[in-house]
Every structure is written in C-alpha cells, then in structure tokens.
Length: 213
Image (cartoon, rainbow, N blue to C red):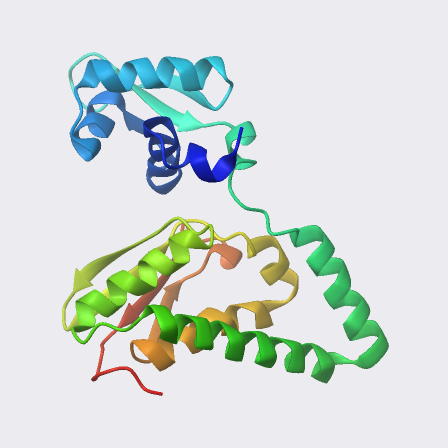
C-alpha cells in the first residue's frame, strides 16, 4: 500500500478522520464526508477486512446501541513514524558525547529551516487563511491537524504527531512548532500536550498582524 495515495482515497480519509475523532459511527462519517451511510459502510467493511478498523457497540442514549468504529494498532503504522526510534538514538548519542548545548543547537537549526519553509507556504494576508495554511502544511508533514475558532483567535489541534515518542525524551523537539507558530501567526499558548498525556496538542493563538519576516 502506498501510504500517500492511500490517504487521498475515501478509505484513507476515513482512517484519518477516525484518528482525529477516536471513534465514530458510519452515520457520523457519512455526514463528515457528504456520503450515504451505506457507502461508508462498504468502505468500513474493507478496512475491517484489512485489519485497520474494529467495531464495537456503544450506547448513546435509551435506544439500542450504535456501532462505532475505531482504528487498530495496525492502522497506526500507516501514519508517519519519521524514524522516531533512530532519531531518539541519535539525539541521545549527541547529548552523551557533546552535551545538552549541542542538542539545543541542533533544534535551533531545525527551527530556522522549518520557519523558512513555513514562510514560503503561509503567505495569506487574512489571519484565518494563514492558520488554514499552517494546518495544511502540518497535514502534509503527517500530522492529523485541524483548527477551530475561539474567542479572539484560533485554536490549532494536533491529534497526532510523528515525533511524539521522541519528544517525550527530548522536549526540545516541541520548540520547532512553537517557533513556527510564533513567527507566522502569533505567540501560541499551549493548553494541552500529547507527550503529557493529553488527547491532542492544542495551541491557542491570537494573531496580531501580518507575517513577520
């Protein structure tokens, strides 16, 4: 299975949506994609056959239980892992041989390059369009992300991160997205974190103007 092409298909989009939601019924997914429940069920049958989803009855009220679908551990392998174990080993070796300042310098360099790429993609004048461009950039890099409106600004939701296991040992990794958000949107306030047991990484932003260069 070619992962990039898979996520462009209906089944791939269903997998990504289940990763975002945690679980959902066929009716929920049908509404999200503008399809009929039967069309979604046909896709879910294939995903279940391939070992990517499983179903379980969930009681949502006084009516009979609703069948909800969620991802299996096999489906998790479809999402980019970014060689996290190897990266973690390399960073440990750098820290052991050259000390913590060397790791800091590495992430400073990564942050600068990430910002340079972001500034080429985040070019809109309107704040919401800029947040949308940032969200799309994250998706292109394997993050299940979306944004929502909040009072006075926006909230960015990262439902998955290909670097989360590395970030648990090397929290400096998280400075990269903080730096990109601050320089392209506005100073972020992180209110939830995957590496600290949260269901998502959530950043609240209140854009203060156009992109800084």
